[in-house]
Length: 349
Image (tube, rainbow, N blue to C red; front, side):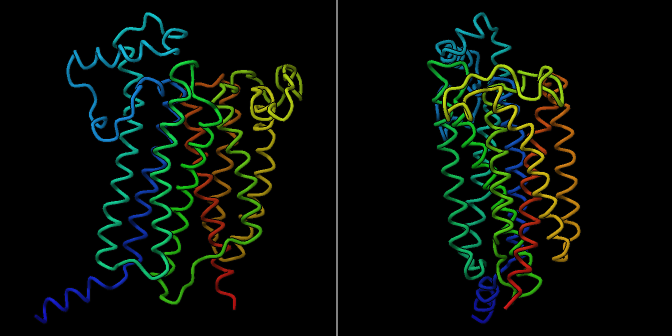
């Protein structure tokens, strides 16, 4: 009986360090998901699977007949008729793989979050005050799956690609989840080091920087969704002009629907983001986290260079995919720096 009570008591002890390491692992999977999502978009693979089967869809076709059935469904889409008429089965398998792998990663992330969460919850290992935050992250993950299918349906029957607006929502949600995982993991690490530590605060500076970064992320998603990176392969000018010649003005919708204007905004808003991140990084350094400051500077420095290279090389797959990957690292490092500033605020009376 004493042994049972002892085991129960041990199980009831909060385990913030174990929780933090688990969340960092899930964040790594989300990062991989963002990278694969970028490759899926760049290879025009997103519409290759025309049905949403959350359980049975985890397995790819396992026979020639099954492959032919999937190919036949794809041949009924507008994308096939407009872009890929005459595609071979081998070529179809290539685009099918990226969409299937992207969805498989989504399922893996769901399991990697939900199953350990249930275990930690039942073991009463989650510190007080964190339960609602974990449920919010779980709900966001579920919502992301729904958004992903909602995005796919926008391009199946009358378009050659998914809606860039829905793509922007899908990508932004993924990056919000990534930032939330990093922030929560850092809170738990601080709690593991000091049981009296309070959660970091999100101050005015951090909110401002995150909103500035959000604009850039949305514009980047619009550029990806409309293939707007292809409208110019020169830098700093766009086809010999600072402001592009080719914008079709249709009111406020021009800000999100015109490839020339979204490319222009994404290109130059990047330097507003850089200025904001420099301010945040310096604040993080003053708060005592020099490593977070270095991470922010390194991430946006590489990202700027990759962005320029992607444009000047006419959007090769490796450069564009790397650009999206480092964009996710910019988000993660920004969350890290904002947390450092917010943790310093939380220490104040």
